[in-house]
Length: 446
Image 1 (cartoon, rainbow, N blue to C red):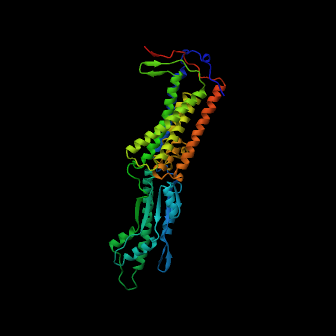
Image 2 (cartoon, one colour):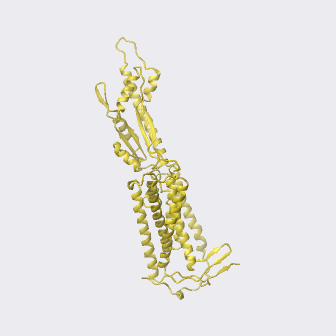
Image 3 (cartoon, helix red, strand yellow):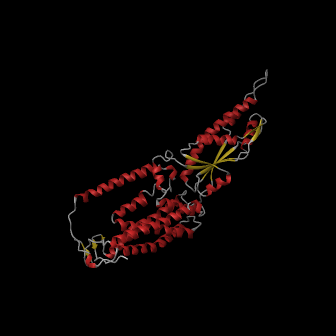
């Protein structure tokens, strides 16, 4: 076990000159940070639909087919094949599944929408063709597109635009074929007068399919069109991230390792002889104490604002875990890397985290280098868990399972980093030196 440094091991402060690199370094660091911010955030929002890849949509064909002119025909199969051919495979991951599997994928947020061809589609299309030459009321066959706003409202709009474009082409193709079939039936016998389709019949046959778009399991009121999960994630991560910086600075001030300034007031007490490891334990303990308090405050405010939360206690527990994991990891990074840890934490938790969170734009609509970050970035893992608790009844398969174990993994990784770094420094006698022996009193700087 490493020992605390003796007070005599801490020398008085000196006043070295500032080398030129000390003035150049801030400009260089800010320039690099600006380049990273531009790459992440401008690339993130520039053209989501151009960046589409692996975007999941389910296709369900329930058409039982029909008998036309004595021959079996299944127009649903033809439409399904046309959709598979027309929808770009490099952008859209089209899941051809049954209705039960499709409903499960929607319920777990695994797909952003579904296209459903009903069982009576071919039959209704045959009736429509007959009705174009025989008087009577008839309804156009329907193909239903269900969006999944609980998975992502932005993704729902993408689903609608993709299906609008694909179904317009399908409607035109089917309409042309149907019109030709009807005209073939109306072909006059030799010596008979030709029979022409009426204008209304031609219009009806030109676009024979009625495409109905509706949300699957619509979002309740008070969710900000689904953004409540993203912002709840944001406040959990921010309080953990900023809490780590606040605890780090205030504890170091109390221990005498950094000065405190309040306007013109400057205070710097004599440093306490304490090892890096014990200092980190104190900071971790403060993070663990404040995490449930902050999580409870967020939950209470959400209830006061009438935000719909079905699993309040589970959200409180997970919020506590997420805040603790972020704060503990942030404190470990600061203990391991010192001042540079501030920049590292900001990049890991904020700069890289926001674009890859999928809270506003789904990761499947971001550049692949951003989507790659979502595999391990803390904000995305927290978002999956929070979204599951708020919108998907807390299903483990809807993201809660992934978010939970990844948060625990991040917490353990943070503990390991902090323990190894501080023990290594303490065992090598690398105490926190270079601080002054000023008395424990406030001093007004003139």
